[in-house]
Image 1 (cartoon, one colour):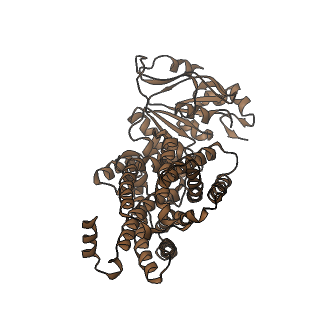
Image 2 (cartoon, chains in turn red, brown):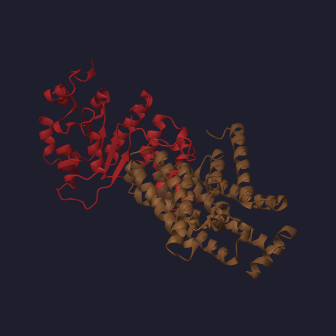
Image 3 (tube, rainbow over the protein chains, first blue to last red):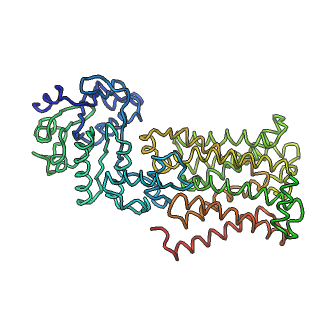
Length: 254
Length: 282
C-alpha cells in the first residue's frame, strides 16, 4: 500500500479525515470503524459491493444519519476548521418530472432568499448563470427540469452542489444511466474543478474504467475500509478479488 | 367597513353588488381563494390532494369534539382539531406501514364518522349541517376581518417558507444536503394548509373546500412551465372562478360554493385543452 502510506503523511494540504466512523441502525452495524483521508484537490472514489455501506457512509458525511466517530475538516497544519461545507450530487434524482419548475427556479430557490413564486430578479439570474457556468450548463437555464436529459440534469445538480463552493463534494454514482458523451463531459468538468477550486471530491462508482481513468485514490469498502490505494493497486488486491469474485484484473467484468 | 362599501359601489356600479351581503361575499371570496390557490400549487406538487381532502372532512370531528368539550367558538375548535389531525396524518405517513392513500382514507372516514357520531348525538345535527355545504352569503364584516388577517399572515408565512418547501418538494435528500430542515418545513406547510382550510370551511363547506385548494392549482399546472407562472395562473384562475361563480349563483339562485367550484372545474378542462394545443409541457 505504497500510495496509501504516502497519502497518510502530510501532503501540505487541507484534508477531510474520517476517524473510526461507525453507523448502527436498529442494532445492525452498517459500517464499522471507517478511517479515511480525503485530500483537497483529489478525487477519491469509493468502490465496494452493493449493500456494503457506501451510500450509508455518504449519508453520514452529509449528517443525514447518526454516526459514531469523527469526521473532521483539517487545515494543512492538522488543525480542525469549525465548518465543513458539503456539496452533494445525488444518484439519479427522483422528482416529479411534470412539475412546472425550470432550472432557474430550482437554483434560485437554493441561492436566493426571495421566494421563487414572486419572480426572479436580474441579480439572482446572474448568480444562477454563474453557478451553471461552473458545470457548462448555462444554456439550460430556462429549460424545464423535467425535460432535461440524464447528463444535463446531473450537470445542473453539479452546478448547484458547487455553489457556494464546498470544501467537500460528494457524488453518488453521478453518471450511472448517463450516455457516454454525458459521462465524459461530467467527469472532465469535475476533474478540472478539483484542481481549480481545491475541492476534496468523494465519488461512488461501479464503472471500473472511469475509476481507472479519473481517480486519484480508491477506497474499497465493505462494512469497513478493506483497502486504500491507487486504482491499479486496489483492482489488483486480494481484497478486491474477494469482494468482486467475478471481476478479473483491472476490472473488466467477466 | 363603510368606506370599503363606498369604494366598492364606485368600482362595481352593478345592481347585483348593491346589497351588502353580496359585497361581503365578494370580499370573502377575494380574500379566501387566492390564499388557497397559492397553497394549492404546493399541495398539487407534493401530491397532497387526497391529504387535504381528508383534512377537510375532519372538520366535522373538530366541530363535534368542540361541542363535547364545550368550546364556545366553532372556529377555534375547527382550527385546533385540524392542526392536530394534519400533524397526526403526516406523522403516520412518515412511519410507513400502509401506503399513504390507505392511511389517509382511514383518517378521512374516521374523521367523518367521529363528527357524525358526536354531532347527531343530541339530535342536533341539523344545526351543523351547514358545515357540509357552507354559506358564503352569511359572512359578516367581523368574519371578513379574520379572513384579512389570516390572508396577511398566510402570505407572510408563504414568503418565508416557500423556497425551502420547493427544494423539499423536488427531492428531500437534496434539500437536506443544503441545510433545509425538511420535516420542519413539511410540518409547517401542513399546518398552514390546515389553518387555511379550517378558516374557509364555514363559508365553502366540507364537501367542496378541497376543490378550491386543488382545482385552480391543478389547472394552472397544466399551462405553466415555471414556478412563478404556476403561482400567477393559480391565483388568477381562483379569483376569476370566485367572481364568476358568485355572479352565476346569484342569477341562478343556487349555491355559491358549488358554482365557484364548477367554474374552477371548467378552467381545468380549458387548461387541459390549452396544454394539448400549445404544447406547454416541454
